[in-house]
Length: 161
Length: 235
Image 1 (cartoon, each protein chain N blue to C red):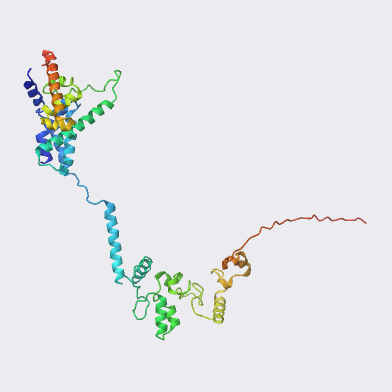
Image 2 (image 1 turned 90 degrees about the vertical axis):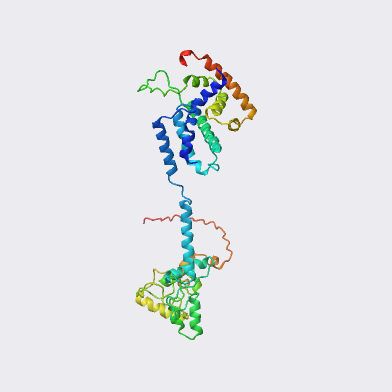
């Protein structure tokens, strides 16, 4: 696979995964992910194996999501006294804001499993490998995550839906 | 809401189209990364080292074949000889075009063949380049330091005529007197061991020159100054 083919196949899934993880500015982070893919794909052994490439790309995306979360934590909070020079441009509205809001109510581990399993569409084995858990533990975590997510979505006010 | 519905909604989250301008930016950066400059196989240090090694190998090969110009051949002989690589000397200055290992070998060859040893001793054949220019320190040639022909044409500069020549004491004294008559007393040149003035020689401990052990006993010197008193008696 060429870097362009990888981008066409996985760009939407990567942006969706990063958005589900609550990464700020997921498009920018996705750009970083595919830039690294373009640089390193020639050294990737299983470049012709689509499943292996998919797993590799989401490993990069997961690491970038962790980096972005660290950066966000280090960023100093602006005090209330500071007034921005220009009004903030509202972020693009995601397809399902209720679902994204409900995902943010899950724990970090639950959100990661759900995002990898259903948004990134990885098999359970790959999710277990990426999160360094057993398949059984991953399956149990996924079950609890879905239950909590269902409750969170149901609890949203009707006008938000 | 059923679990299937929830999974379907999660799946659709990963199928949201990317904004065209964002996608264009991504594709541009990917294209740049793919077509970017490829990393050189060898660093500049490796290339410089290889070039240097090639230069030395080529020069050594040419020197071993005796194909370098005469001065370079002599330099190669001296330099490579110091590290144990035998390279012929140039044939510059040798009358028969033969290369000799050193000047002494040439003089011996002339002596053995009954030729003019004195002329052979004054020739450049077999001498290192720096020695034949008049400042030779090469003991290998068997010639005294400073010996050699006067290249400037000035009899008062360069090595004295008796240096390096196998002259007896009488002939040496005559040559020295002639030079002094022409050039005056030689102050600039380093004095030979025999020419050292006794006062100068005393400055350097002669025993240390012979390698003898010298014990220095400190002597306390007391200087007493007696004031001279002059008494004048008035008549």
